[in-house]
Length: 193
Image 1 (cartoon, helix red, strand yellow):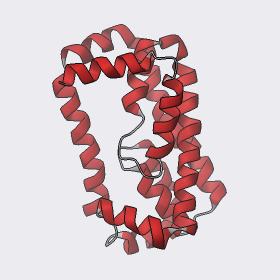
Image 2 (image 1 turned 180 degrees about the vertical axis):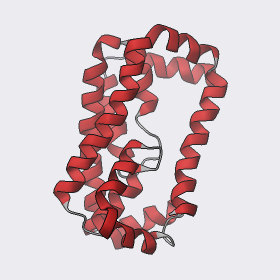
Image 3 (image 1 turned 90 degrees about the vertical axis):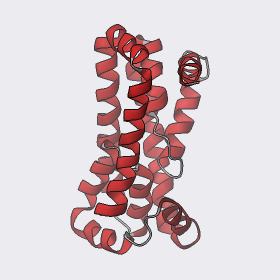
């Protein structure tokens, strides 16, 4: 089943509408969706390495726009939508402590959320709810999201064929590792923040 999913994702990555799918996933991941755009960035760069920088640009722009949507949810709709999202991910109880950190470390928190496996949607909604300076939020989001996507794409662009062979050979363990990092991102926010 994992092999079929990988083959489907690789096929989607070379599909004429792949950039639209990437933009849609990157946008919703930044405000509500739990899967990161890396699930399409990786196969898209492997399938079309000459498009790597365009893929990074699309993912970054869509992710930042989605981040602004998440910010708006936190700013305007926290009580109706933001609270529900935080409850769904189990972060509502820790949110009060998190709010206090924002006043001192807001830009750094956004950077960490945009660059790491910490769920970026939680960061974007929290940023809006505490009314973090919108300019700071936007600039740090651009830097952190572009940096993250650029590193992934650059490594795949430079070492594409060997990495693709490595991924195809070790697909099961790599998928497990990806899921572990995704879960760890949620755990870090839930228990350490």
